[in-house]
Length: 173
Image (cartoon, rainbow, N blue to C red; front, side):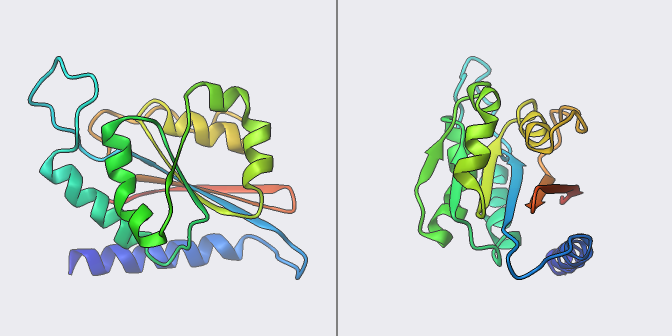
């Protein structure tokens, strides 16, 4: 029941969000979906590249379900176990391979990234301190602050239509 309410809320949000964008038949729509990696295994504080915990693996599957109606053209992730494992269910569902990115290099090359991904639906999996920064780079100004360490539920959606950028953030827990 909780998941059904979440999905209905998400659909309503997407519908409201999309109504703010005026499309014509020649419009090219680019949409970026940013999420933070799911909960990591914190049993070994010395491990700099931990895998996801059981809770994190479940959240990764939930992200794939929540975003299940989105046909992704590419899925980007930093090269860490926790980000790759968060992306894995969506990768499988979309029959894609991960495209790795380096942070902050991707921010320095954001114009090339925008050109390369124009007209596509892109999922980007990052971290509490990189996901909002990357979304801000796409938006063109600093709007979002770093996420708190216990926040694994933000979904940042940035859409570009005919050079006009709209954005929203949903918290899905």
